Image 1 (cartoon, rainbow, N blue to C red):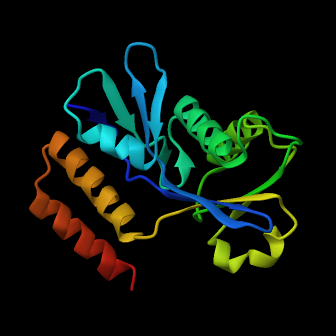
Image 2: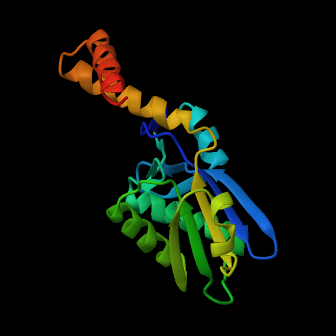
Length: 188
């Protein structure tokens, strides 16, 4: 069975100036365990996850919009940019990236480095939804939107991580529920 990192994949859209959306994919990558070769990205990687094989690993290299696995993320973005532009770039594009709010400076730097590897000439990272910053990104050749169309899945991922950690520490789910209620009440 294909192995998954437990990160909820982000939704990635790539917009080209004067063309609009040219690519919509999930932040998933399938690669061969033996040599690390990328086999598929996005929906194709999701399909590979459903196949019963121990030779393929499918992961989301992004965690809530930030880079969790640098090498896999760089490969994923390279694959997506090649799919968008073709094998040869006539010139290096100016790229704007819209990320979810709250990614760390380290995650921003990793994202910046990964996208410079794809051939970006100039790069800007904006926190927030593309719809909120359309004026700021109009001048860029490429706009990459990293978001989650169903943000509640990120919340479910966080709760799942909390429950898994609590179980490892011998704390019951009922106690976690009590702690969450206490936190909600103290936040009012």
